Length: 224
Image (cartoon, rainbow, N blue to C red; front, side, top):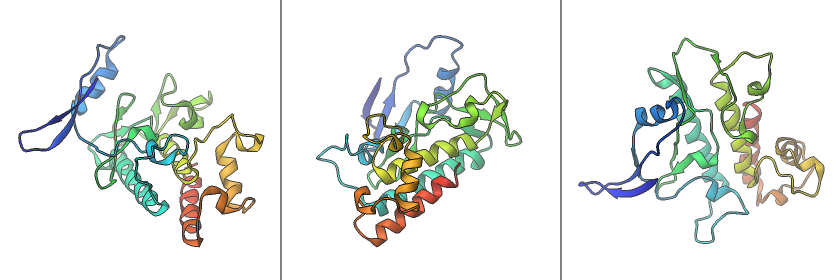
């Protein structure tokens, strides 16, 4: 359960009360080591602003330029988790729902229940099972020939999320009319990079927005 609270100095916070967990309690430990009191993020999660089918009418529309700033902010957050801490933190569930926005739309990565801590010297981490959300999980999680994963798994998930921010739709959509659109990365690559479809259908209004969209898509391609 989560609650909104106010500290004595007036700062708003989000208070998370953990439920009793079953099993070895590792998820509980991961959460407790971080905190139970978080900075309150008034603009909610990123997914509210990027999916056309769930965007709320009373929510501010975010320009592609603002979304690009958020993309950069998330990248800096991941860099801190992977290289800026004394211990390397692998999140394993990067997606729009796990990105909260403050009153200035600065992004914060949240929810570390699936996270794994490892030393900076560990380039590969052994995993017994896949972690995360299916449409964002890196392919190496499902490859039997690969015995471990690394921070690059978070980078892959980040790239999938960036594509969703460009197109305003989930990266896997079985409800589309054309089979070629079901797997979103293929669809978006042909949409903007190869020029198979008019940018206007993606909601791009001018040349500047098209340039930003191309930058974001190329960022994704660099995350593969």
